[in-house]
Amino acid sequence: MKTLPSFIILCFLSILSMHTFGQILEATESKALLHASVTSMNGKARQGDIISFQGIKSKQMYKGITDESGRFSILLPEGDTYLIKYKTFTGNVNYDKLPIPNKAGAYTFQLNIQYDPPKTYTLDNVFFDTGKASLRPQSFIALNDLVELMTLKPQLEIEIAGHTDNVGTAESNMTLSLNRAKSVRNYLISKGIDANRVSIQGYGDTQPIASNDSAEGRQKNRRTVVNITKE
Image (cartoon, rainbow, N blue to C red; front, side):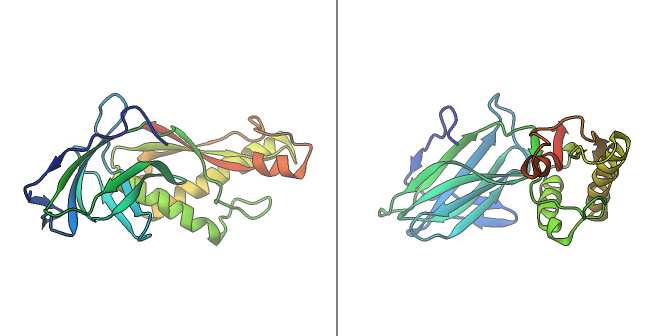
């Protein structure tokens, strides 16, 4: 997903050292040193964002995590073009491409990234037993991704919203949706997320996104949604 001036690359011929996570990074003949700055569209630093670089030729993946100032540094092998992606609650989103030429000398690049991810996400891979609030084990992968992002973003607060189809009574659906949201919250808390950062709400069948007249529509309406309430 390409936004406004997506990035600005400045090349320097001299080697620049950088301390990253206790390590000293230096550009070499074969690896370029990349300094990245990640902000929202209004210029606010984005802390705890995971930015990945996947080589189109090599298929290798390299990742950086922004600090409090929205910055990180990383070494990337020269002679490849990298797909830039940023991670959200539901997976990686394509941002742009970055060519790293294979030339003599040691190169340092400055990469500026700007984006505003959505405030609402549907957790498509969170599943419950039919008519119950118990999480199925296949839900844990998606929820662990949510735990990872919340751990990296200590200021982030969210609401877990449960939704159902219209099978059953309105009262039972409201209770079921709230209990499912509570199950997700309890899982996050069990993984170390502060309870005060996660609120819950059950909406029952009051906010359908598809027709309840078909099995496919009812499946879409049975969903768990993450609403970001504070960043």
